[in-house]
Image (cartoon, rainbow, N blue to C red):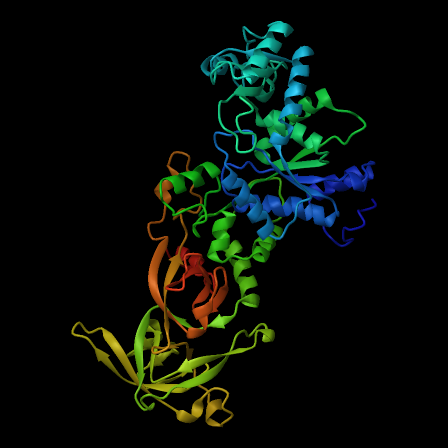
Length: 566
């Protein structure tokens, strides 16, 4: 089999790529390849959409084929321009460019004209039953349906009613247009499916021009055909729809044109999340989260705000790949991909999030120093920065114990540790409040032990190194610590339980942190490694008066350890 020129000879093909390669082998010209990503603008895109985006645009890159971004905007009751803008922003942020920006609404006239021809050819009719009557008449998976009493209306009556539907003469729900296929079909989707319904609603693009709107199954395949899409990839729930997709195409297909081929791949669900747009909308509307881009959400906007990188999400999508069976992916894999990318790109800085005051008693009062610290151990091109040092510092409360066992390599009374990029100190005494809580740690320092000073004392080895910030120079910031939004691994798994019962009440903790002054000019979206604590990014809520940081991900996966103990 001669593979596409732009596909690597060593690459192991997934079943989607095998389908494309087989079509090329059977005569489809490479220049006829065209893919599409077709979101409905009724919400923000989520991590599942990210996989679909990476699949379709990735195929475009591999085969040097164009990819359309097409909005399935056939339901104005739920769709908004805000969602269109958010989707475009997400696709661009992930690093992809589309060839054509298209809308199903671009084809409303063509779809209507085809529907009129269906009526003339005896392949469609106007049904005036109620939705309840239609549900009974349609039968069940084990019993055939029965014909609508309106199925044999004359062509003239159907044409008249359909035009009047279009003109807005009837209220919602009074009539629909149905394809005339078979009420005895095994596939219930083939039992005279709805093509159009009346909907008096303002459309974000076409305004009030239309009072009828096409159903997804009617609009989707025909939109693919009008755009000459070669391969229409969708998730497995659309497998039963493929028969209808092909039936509709059969009625209009011109053999001189490319015929779109629908094929299905499995949805990749993510643990401790929900990816249903309906459920995500509930979380927003009922204020379980602050917005669609809340960093706890599985939306692409939420992941971006939390500090995830486009490269990490693309790598995640590539790692989980494409499959034929639905499965649950552990969110820890996504976090690993984020951590792996940030480890290479995020500058190192110092911050203290649970502070206790440390006083270096033999350090001169009023003295200040500027110490050199490297910005990354992974990327030397990030260079160095200056960090101020003084007599009084903040360190993490967890980095000190009055008494500790031999496996505790941080600061204790009578032992030494190194302050990162600075001096070796020795714990001497503590000051406590009336309740016995430590309020100050007093220590002494070795003046000749400063990191990088070149002295023999500076090379002296101690077992522990801890981070710090100078109290006098520290910047106060709001730090938002995020946990899983759901306590259950698969909140959708128990169909008898409302998924909201699994919402984690401790998914957000807001604390005050103290940061080194180099972060004073940090901008929205910038990512950093808070040394020894994890990866953090500047939130859009930051201002010149107050810095706000989001915790992106820890330095290692601690969640799995927690779960194993429970």
